[in-house]
Image (cartoon, rainbow, N blue to C red; front, side, top):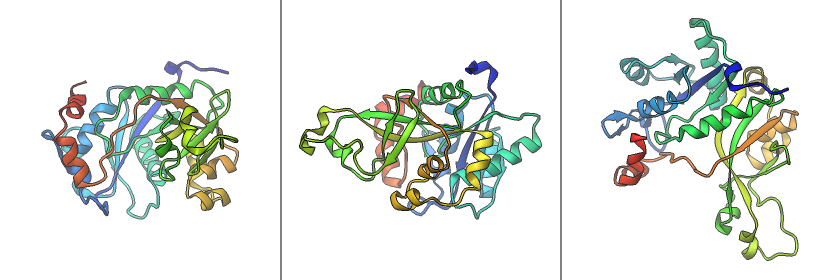
Length: 261
């Protein structure tokens, strides 16, 4: 059965930690006069009415409160952003008269996130069978296809994810790897939407055998029978992992122009 977008209640959660190893205090870094976390928050608000920042640091909490954003304090002991999202969901719903059907997890270090990508995720949940939704991007560059840091995805004709791997999948038999760019592969873009019951379920799952082999959390979900729906996107969000990434962004007028969209 299919639903309309209007029938589904969404909550955007933005996990934001202060203690990044490569860039401490990253959510508070200045992006053209506003802290990074505010830039992310404001872009997400373009497509989601209900948005909350999930942090473990009082400084971030105070900044978000200061610009009028919704924010909840979460434990410092979470091992993953998924765990932090579940706690934030529970905190938010306990304090607001709002019970979402779907949680969209947006990274707190992507101030140039494209709102249409969130819209693509939302549409996946019009299919009532969807437990989790994520984005994929078609690629033909051989260096990306063979790069183990770029996670590849194969999907079915109905767009459900069949498998995620650090290896190039599918294997193109009888063709030299140098020529694999003649075929379209899909790489994973790490943004997720979770139906609320699925989010509660994945937080309680034990680490799976496939996950241990590939070091990919989403394989745990597939191994346990959850349906992960994919949506294609032509753009890849610009994440900021290091101070050098920030410097590169601040010197690129084309990227900074996205803030005016």
